[in-house]
Length: 528
Image 1: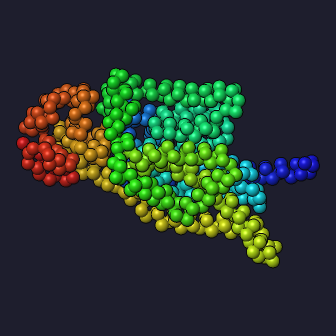
Image 2: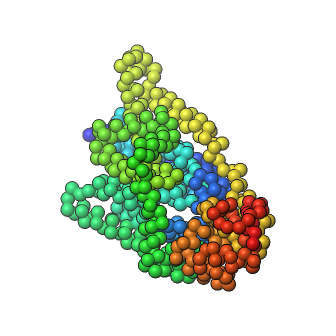
């Protein structure tokens, strides 16, 4: 290659790098704007977000939330709440939502950066017409990820999944770009946040698999460091549990309690719990969820991108499939109504396929148009065709986002906040309040321990009867309410011992409990 050609190539690479950086910043800013403007104003139950009250109460009280304990998320949320309360006069639930907004916005930028990096390889996007073309396809992939309904829904509530998708994107980006130290950190943080991140490890291991023995040692260092980082962060759980905070799942100051928590023993029955007769329907739901993220047409573009990987870059194809298949199998066979949330890493990989599908699509259109209409080739330049396709995709993504906005936006959502306001007006001091479902239980926990929403009703005794059969929970209640007669004993004895001493309210009808009920706001008062 001549010096002049090398100089032109260097200039082109610099220009493409410039466009890539602008694409990352632009898409990140767009995501932050979209999520920030549609985020829940406070505590919410929408979009499978009932766990937010538990997470916030655990962070405020330095407690331990539901399995698997989420040590990384709680540490970040505690720091974020401390910083936010010092800078902004916002309630904890609003600040928790803004943390999700930030994490999801950063994940959109990482999606663009990863797609742009992969598109630089000639296997992915040969013959692109200009240095801005590949960053443009990457940006459109980032916008598609941003507007995917599952991504959007988790970006605007207080939940663990916005951080989960940020860490998944960081793992993918660090692995594919060869950043070993960052990859070790991302893998360790991932396992310390959400244990399902280990489902991504087979793909990472495949990508790093050695051609020489020296690389095997490097793989050992990366995964060893990841396990060390994750293990150190999990030490937060027994340390926090030993202080007996009011939110203390598993009471994990013992080996038994710690293992119950981090292994998700309470949820183990859901894993592979789908009856064989239901598997076809679950698989169909999996396909429907994926199609809904990008629309069927967009999913077709993504599959075209995967097909191009299959033809031209088999190693990357296998990486993508190893990334997608374990997570998909877990989501299909995990027998809960919200198991689709686990597909977030799958959607991220599909966004990379989408970018490649656009790149190879415009290349195919250019070649086909030149063959079919050779006389128009001079007027319809590759640059014009690329811009036309990009404009069409951008309009499509904007239209889809606008159609999804009324369903996904939580700006006007106040159901959980209204419940707490009604609780403050209905409950009486020293009441015994019995709940069963996550929504009401965690909202009450947030109102008592995570915020000042129920400060006007002192002395509330909160009991979840679905947890009462666990030894650790009865031990926790005995620590929290030693003055309550019958606490920690048989549940019906507890009711009888307190029926004449304090008001007893039910957050749900709970018709299996004895006694007459009288409606009181969103509660039912149990008559003695």
